[in-house]
Length: 413
Image 1 (tube, helix red, strand yellow):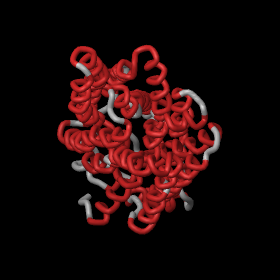
Image 2 (cartoon, rainbow, N blue to C red; image 1 turned 45 degrees about the vertical axis):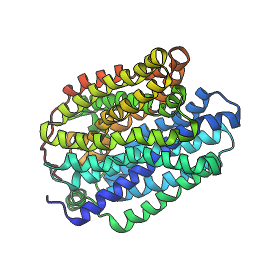
Image 3 (spheres, helix red, strand yellow; image 1 turned 180 degrees about the horizontal axis):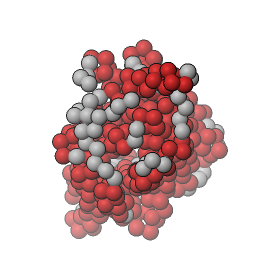
Image 4 (cartoon, rainbow, N blue to C red; image 1 turned 90 degrees about the vertical axis):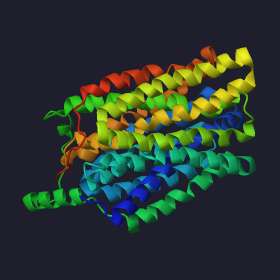
């Protein structure tokens, strides 16, 4: 199907939805130190109460996938964006770790849910020849969300504190929710499937979750889930600690958000490159190349500046960070491939549910990655801890070839 102007509007709106979600999730990276000081807890504990609840994304994926398969991709998307706004306000008002955990659980559910609904909607609205690029544009919302969080940290934290930053973070999701309501069309493939089922059964089609593990889907669900888990573990184990790593290398605290912004610009190019590469050379080859790139760059980024600092001093070390950082960020472009690939793995009847489940099992990696890095940093330093994430990336590069190649596959009702 040929993309129309309305589909390009959809592309932009879903990207904005993903950006607000990623921004809310990653803004917490900038407030770990302030929160730990205010509540008199360790940095590891502060990181844990902020990121461990995001494992709820493993539940958010199938939950929102069920809603998307039964009630529509658009309805599920609106609900997810609403939860982002509620979560941001909940974080801003939290008075103790328990309240923070509850608020961050909401953003975890929404993070899983938005991906499920948004990626399925875009995948079903684009033709097979350009689906990878379209999904890559939407997933640009993730690095843009990190850039957005960096700007919030830079402009709001000094004057309004971490609570004020999260209040500001709650405003864009409300605007995006209105855009989804009035500017986004429902998936034509889902509507067709719904009408066909309604004619046959005179009711809205149910979602047989048992199909996840039958009819040839079981291996795909298990392998895809493992790749998502390891890919997210590696990403969050590295990227959420970049502000702390910059501080450890000697960057001025006041400008760390801006330098983080600079480093993350590489991801924008990486996401678009991965999308184009996967459409041209295949989903698996694109994933393998970027996973291996992330493995190499996490080692170089984590260890080389530290060694240069010992040998040549902090100025050379900081220069190395600024040269290597955007390349590391570029290598995380593999994230833009999950949406198209996982949507192509499963039939329409369970597409949102199965792809959402497989991808969002990875939220467990999101939850434990930052905490493990914090624990390892006590023994190996932040840089050494970042380098250990390379093992996860290598495993992903090998596992991807256990799944079928789907590039060029048409999605039918």
